[in-house]
Amino acid sequence: MWHIMDKVPEKVGPSIRKDEKFWERLNKCVWGTENSDDFVSQWNSIITYYELMGNDWFSTRFAIRESWIPVYFLDIPLAGMLRTTSRSESANSFFNRFIRRKLTFVEFWLRFDTALECQRQEELKADNASLHTTPKLMTPWAIEKQCSVIYTHKVFTKFQEQILAARDHCIIQGISESEDLKCFTLSSQTGKDRVVQMNKSNMFGRCSCKLYESYGIPCRHIIQVLRAEKQSEIPSLYIMTRWEKRCKRCVLYFFSFSIYLYFLFCTIVLIRYLILQGTILR
Image (cartoon, rainbow, N blue to C red; front, top):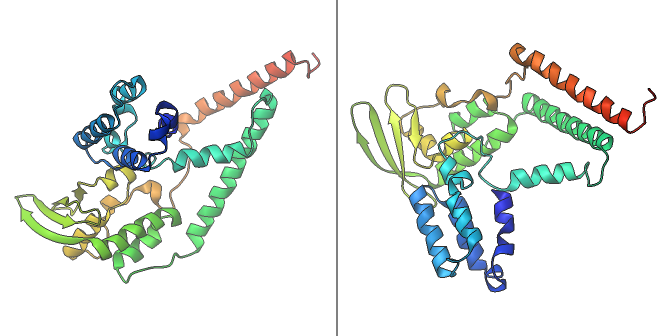
């Protein structure tokens, strides 16, 4: 959705384009809403206030909202890819260092391969740092120490933000129980109350903020509830294998033959191109 937001300045008038309040409201609507009804309400309010009812581009974006607005993806585990535009911008910036317009096919192929090799090297450096160094702990909590050993440095940094927010901003306001569930209502920094529904048997809970569902790490509200329940460690159900330091990156044998065919096809295409260009003597 970053490219859609990037086109907004072209689709509004100069006065709206320079209106900081408009951008604040639009960004809050697109990135900050937590359910579809809230999004629709805020979107309609913006469209009405800035008199954009007759704008076909905005009408079309609203019609396809389920394909690009993050709130419609909150229940889908996407490892945080939709949380900001920075991921797409970072990828573009990285590849722009190696690739430019008007490259020949061969030049593009070689430069793209170089870019991928640089990414592999950076990943190896990050893996080595995660395996052989220890991040600085910010609290005496056993949960933080546990996850500093399990998570990669990058993921642990995100988790540590939740630890600090749980310590500084989360207060349990109320508790209710049913046969299998225990429901906690917590205050939050945003001013919105959060509800955590905790399964009594395995201590696995789901929070209304849906950070765990969308990113794969326990949120500040779940962390605070676990502490309230005298849990000194994060239950293993919360730990996603993909975020672990020692996650094995292996190619499944099932796909090995198809990968071989893919590279064979690419090689044939490259050779055929070189022949057509007259760079290979037949």
